[in-house]
Image 1 (cartoon, helix red, strand yellow):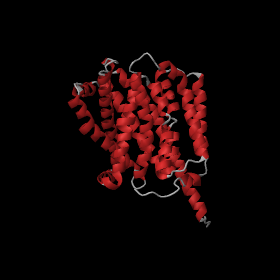
Image 2 (tube, one colour):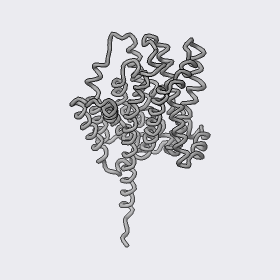
Image 3 (cartoon, helix red, strand yellow):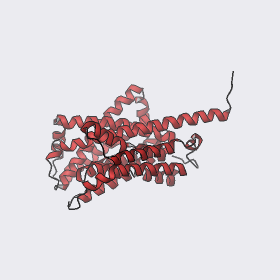
Image 4 (cartoon, one colour):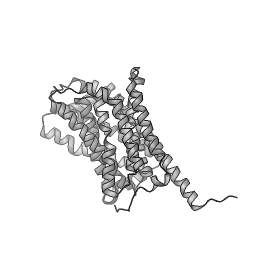
Length: 352
């Protein structure tokens, strides 16, 4: 009977972690790309399609309602996910350990929900979905910088090169259409820019923050905790304050959304995509790190266009294929990094 050495066993373990980490990150990209179809379609359904674009306060409140309903739906799908996995007990145990663990998920929920998802909806509503997608491509840079400064996650030259190529590919895919969406005569365009900045910073920061908790918790339970806190923030603090401090009909917006079958269909489809995209997202962090997980997730740019083609039957322009080639090449650059290098991401241990 043949025996393997310790080094060989470690190499197999690292290689398996790397393979699964990149697989989860790729599923993140696929499902995130799919989310842009129902996420954009929602703006064409009542009550959102009936709102005057020049009524800034009403549009922002509607975006908040949209994001809240979205978060509730995502939490439902995550509840089903963990129930099927038999991890409901793990979820409760993780949630109640606020001082040591779930506080990081609470902070991640602020970065990813009221900042990133809300900001992305703002960018789509005030400028357009292409602009929202391309600006989100820069979030891995934010996440990598935070992870590097905060808990010394390594950024190898190969990882940096692969991340740059992926972002470049996304820019090539969306760049030409982006220029057609920008309307500099629109007085509300600054809200779209603000939302885009919020999305890039929020998603980048969320990955770095959530990774701190995933050192000592299960990612499936963690992502459910993250959306639990987001729903609480929207339900207990943000939406009630909007209703109390403004004359915006928040309750009417909620009622109109819930009573519109097509609007709810798009929300359910988008939430399903986002729920399992986020699940894969969090799983990848513990296996290949924030920098690599977010960079591979950036392939959502290519998948977003592919899904749009499937649903509209409009073939993409030539530059899409150039961008797709670059994004794929960047992923391969990162994937071919030695497994041991990916496994040794931290220069030093940091306490929770």
